[in-house]
Amino acid sequence: MSGTRSDGDLLRAIAADGDRRAFEELYRRFAPWLTARLRGRCADAGIVDDVVQETFLAVWRGSARYREDGDVAGWLWRIGSRRLIDALRGDGARGRLRQALARLRHRNEASAEERVLAGVEHGDLAGALVRLSPELRAVLQATVIDGLTTREAAVLLGIPPGTVKTRAMRARKQLREALA
Image (cartoon, rainbow, N blue to C red; front, side, top):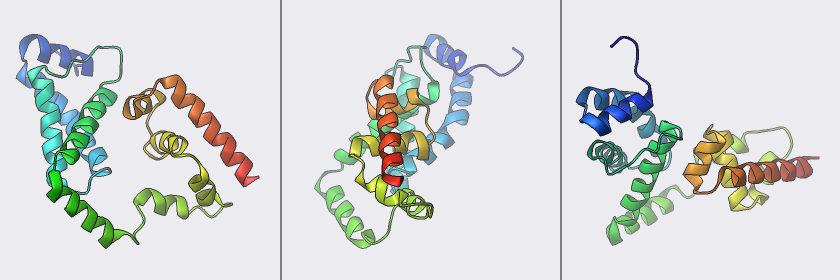
């Protein structure tokens, strides 16, 4: 076969034949990206590595079904982000204690997103962003800071694409009004 197979072709080969080479290619294409994205949500590299492995294991075993109507990266992100949430929730009391201690230790340190937003010197953008509702801020973070498409943001946030568009429009309107 000449040329590079599409992401959909790789997934079909994995599902139909258990094609190991297709799986390896899919892993090479998306594992570094998924790891980087998940590390933006969880500082524990061990948990992130486990979640990436579990995500691709679900693809290999066929327990994660791709419906061929969406973006493969968005689909993998949805699986990985949900598995990350499961891993963090399932970490028990010891994990919650570790997270609480980490928050205390780093409570005066702003997140990367907060540093970027606070560094904007044109108007009071950081203050205007803080005044947005959490739902509107989440859409802006997904679409502007994380650079996701509307469809990918919808998958990540678990809301319809139309809702992402509406919330983004409302957020932009509120920001314009706050900065005028």
